[in-house]
Length: 157
Image (spheres, rainbow, N blue to C red):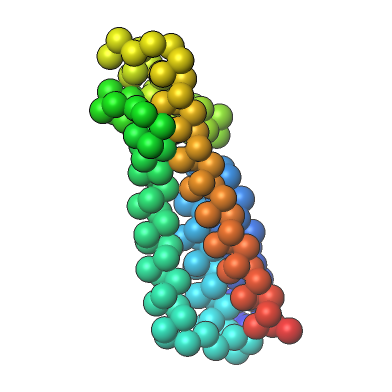
């Protein structure tokens, strides 16, 4: 049974890491499941504190992942129109696949600002902020997914 748990653990860890950049998959929660599966094997014994701490990090990161493009829009001078545009662009982007999720918030923020009457340069700056927020979230997810893989490999060897 331990071998099945270890194999399943690494399948979840790899799919979770891929999900950090592919918007269709909930990357970090899947990676966390991989960490838990290894914990339930005889190869690893993570502390309850360790598992709960990482659970909190996963939940917080999942929530932030949706708000970071909005934050980036605001930070780079966007108005509520740009923030709403970024949110709507993200939602529409889900239906367009990975590129839609990457560029949806950017396009939405730019369109929102242009509808509000902003100059093109200000609208593009707002869209850039949205893109930066997306990149920050993606890098954070990749880092956490990488740490989960590190902890699992370390536990096995």
